[in-house]
Every structure is written in C-alpha cells, then in structure tokens.
Amino acid sequence: MERWPTEFATDQVDHVIVGGGLAGGLTALALANAGRGRQVTLIDRELRLGGNHTWSFHLTDLRDDERTLVAPLVTRQWAQHEVRFPGHRRVLEAGYATITSERFAEVLTSRLVGAGVRLLLDRRVAGVGSSLVRLEDESLVRGRLVIDARGPDVIAPARAGYQKFVGLELALQSDGPWTRPLLMDATVSQSDGYRFVYLLPFSGRRVLVEDTTYSTNPFLDPFEVERRILAYVAAHGAIVTGVLRRETGVLPLPLDGDGDVDVGSPRARAGGPLAIGYRGGFFHPVTGYSLPLAARVALAVAKADTPDETTAAVRAVARQLEPQRRFGQLLNRLMFEAMPPASRWTALDRFYRLPEATIARFYASATTWGDRARILVGRPPAGLSWRHLFGRRTLGAQAVGG
Image 1 (cartoon, one colour):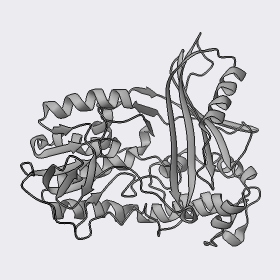
Image 2 (image 1 turned 90 degrees about the horizontal axis):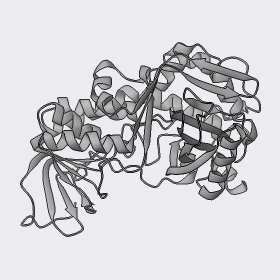
Image 3 (image 1 turned 135 degrees about the horizontal axis):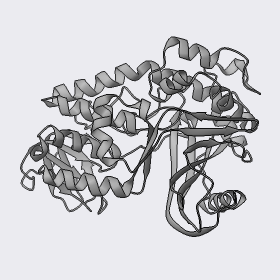
C-alpha cells in the first residue's frame, strides 16, 4: 500500500464511504438509522448525492427490514407490472416501486445531515486504502474502515456481456396509454441482441422510457437510441412536449467468476478497501438490479461493530448469494454465447410463462433448485445451442465478428 503523509488527515471515524450513489448512500443511511451517523464520512465527486439514475425493484425483492430502510426514498409505487412479447402479454400481480435520483438526494441528504454524517461533496478521490482516502487536493480522510462504493471497474469484453440503455423522462401533452410499469416490451424490432422497451408512468403526463439491449459489445449510440424512443412513444399515440431528463448506461454482466465484478471477492485484501455495490459484485448477474442487494449489504454493515466484523458480514452476504450468482452466470452464458442475437427474446418470453412465484424468487436472488429446474428444463428457446450449456467460451469471437 502506498504510504501517505498523515499530517493532513482528518479526525478518524468508524466508516469512510467513498461514493454517494445507491450502495454508498443506503449504507450511510443504515448507519445513521442505527445511531452511528457521527462516525460516518461520505465522500462523493458530485455536488449532489445519487447522480443521475432511477432505481427500481419488485416489492417481493426485499425483506421487511430492507423495505423499511428504502421506504422513505420511494418516488412511486404500483400494484402491478406488465411484460409484452410477440403473441404473449402478461400482467403480474407483484407490486413494483422506483426511486428517482432527485428524491434520493433530497431525502437522503436531509436524513444524513440530521444524523451527523459528514458529507464531503464535489470532492475527487486520488487514492483509496483500507483506512485512508486521499483526495485530489492532497488532504486525507481517515477511518477505521474504508468502504468503496464507486461503481463498476472496467471489465474485459471476453468476460462479460453488456446491458446498455438510454432512458428519457418525458413530458406528454395529454395522458398517455400507460397506467402500470412495463418492464419489458419485446415486441419492438430486435437488433444487436435482445432489445426491449422499459417504461415507468410516474403520472399520466410524465413517463420514463428506456430502450435496453443485451449485447455482446459495449458500444452505445445514444442519439440513435433516443430517436427510437421518441418513435416508440409516437407509435403509441403520445405527444411529447419536452425531455425532462436523460440517462444512459452500459452495465457489464458477468459470464463467469473470473472478472473484476465478482460477488465473493470484495476488496478486503490487505491494504485495500471493502468494496460494495456494483464494484463489489452485489447486483443481480442477469438483470443488473442492484437495489435489493445494496439494501441487504447496508443493513449487514450497520449491524457490525468492528472493521473485521463488517468485512465478515459482507462476505457472509456474498457467500449466501454464491449459488444465485453461479446460476445467473450460467444463464448469461446461454444468453450471450449460445443463442443467436435475433432469437434471444424467446428465452425471456419462455421465462415469463413460468409461475409468478418462480419469477419473483428469481428477481429476489432467492431461486430454489426447483425454480432453476423450471427455468432450464423443458422445450428450449429458439436457436439455443446446448453444447454451450456448461461454459464453452466463444463470446470474444462473437464480439469481433459482430
């Protein structure tokens, strides 16, 4: 570990959290709720916590204590959600909720400040160790434990597929035709992999529309995707009067356990911080959903007393998730390696014909052996090559060949 001068270090606290997004913010909130706010420093490079994101979850994704933690941050909740595929539509009865970055920042900042959490905003980090954080102005922040929640590292294409999206929050001239979340509309044209539209109706005249693709390459043309979104909205009879917010993302989804994003390998090695959130691999390996696991890890951190106990608690969560992670990576290999891009949607079409309880446990990272059998066994999706089932690695060649 690099030796840093200590004469610039601030007073030591229990936890220094680097990154004020979902994982870092929820961890700070859980500590504040536990009466430990004055022993927390939260550092973020932006002027406002939360960045520019929308985080959603099924109500069945969370345990009671996790729902209690995130409840004040929820922007909108619906009783049902819907999926659409060619020749197949389904309304699911599980509730669905979303958190906007605006509400996240407003509520979280107020609660953290009220609990005595020290916020260092608009501060860029130059280096992170196990107990020290060096800022670009050469000042140091000292803590008994540094928690790294800055998001994903760069991942080699040969180790991941990609979920990439553009989202537009739109103002409409009159009420649109959507009354419930549309998690997947795969009736759109398929290109560059599995493509679908995701839509959240915050109100009749305010909707978030995301165009998402599961692809073997990370290239994203936001202008072209934005054009597709506006065409989709127009095709459904809605007239856009303004774009309220734009959001883009390219999330790596692991195919095996050897990449940089890997649940079970938080950077708790000697000299390193404890990684949580996407950086620590705490996200759903197939969907990319991160809120349920961010809440779970946040509560585990808040219940631990010492740095060693905190590290052990986070590792325990990782161990519990290990079977889910491996199963998700198997599904990713099937999606990205064993199916032609144009027919990948058929795998999701088949999945959404399963019992609703199986679907709910899948999103909650709680699949049983029976659930996994239901997902894998039966008539295979169109184009599936079974020879790839147990891990043949061809993604690199596919990415090069297009």
